[in-house]
Image 1 (tube, rainbow, N blue to C red):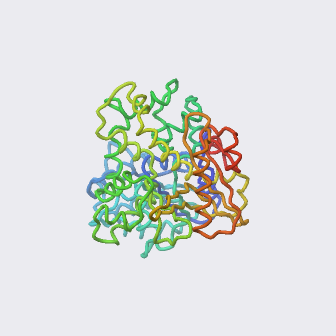
Image 2 (tube, helix red, strand yellow):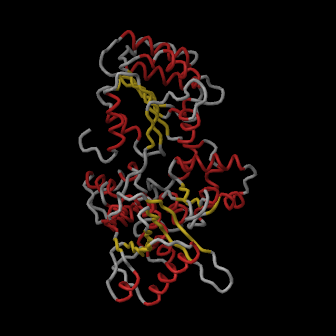
Image 3 (cartoon, one colour):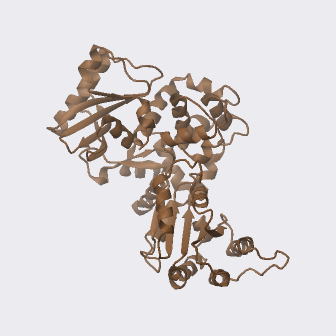
Length: 481
């Protein structure tokens, strides 16, 4: 595991199990290409004795043939003496038990079933057979660790984590693997000899979202613009068709999932559940709930609770950077080839969009923001706030509100700018109005700190001194935790 980037908490969970005297069943889930398989193989490199990867969209017959090939590889069986595939999954697991018992070991042994949801379908006996395998044999093997891994987070949660049958409460540990933070992204790029400024890394993050597999395609010696051109706008760009591979691979029939993603891409400030239902013309609230949960658990969307509102009034935002970028700039783009992205960056649409993209990134790095504000140890509730104006009034939106339990609040104004930002008289007036309207409409008695978070910081002039109590720049987002 030399030079492993990030995943400190996840690695600790996996290595702690090695010291256990009991069998362990570990569920790992997270969106596609986030590095789940690499994590398991790296941590359990010496203990891994069997690995099976499900195949997307094939029958049990093909899955069982794949199982036998994995068996032959793992147990070094003579390929010249092929064994007939089992007729069903119960028989397959019995054969695995036979080989494990025929090759006993006192050392820890890891069985890894990757893309676990792909092994199961409606007419399959896979899940019931796996249930039997775990409860009647594997759970009794003190030196055994069984890892099941899947990109379909919703399937893993519904069928494994919340299983109401034989697997109920059987999970020893669960790991939801998230994309890299900006700090981890910087370390990952540096490990690949890609040395870019934080501003350039921030732009790459707006496209890749910290997905390791995407970042691994960025080459040393090219600028952020060159990398985006090559990956997104070249004829054979690696990310050119990723959007249409991504959702079906995760959710099967993904029409409803994609419909919500498209809907949210047109309303970057977010939509309520009711607004999504109306915009996407969903007839069933239950169906909508399942699709929203699936997208949220896979890190494509995020639900934000507005200050002073109930959970029923949550605002859902599209927060997957790649999907946002694809739908705004790549889909139906007539421009291709070198220089395409440089040209698009000069347009007003980029300037408007980048502000929302930067805001999303900041909302994902609240722990880093709290650290740099010196309030990591203060219990804080994160939210946003907006006031829809009546006739003759001005609307107000607060990007990020940190409601602290030390009788203070930080109203965080987020501004993406390509240079040091200057607060002029008009902008200062806008900030003071936000503060005043918020205090009047919420009735809060807490101390309010206006906090400015920009890319390169802000100039300390009279308007700044009049309105701002705390200032952070993008370096705060790159802080390790």
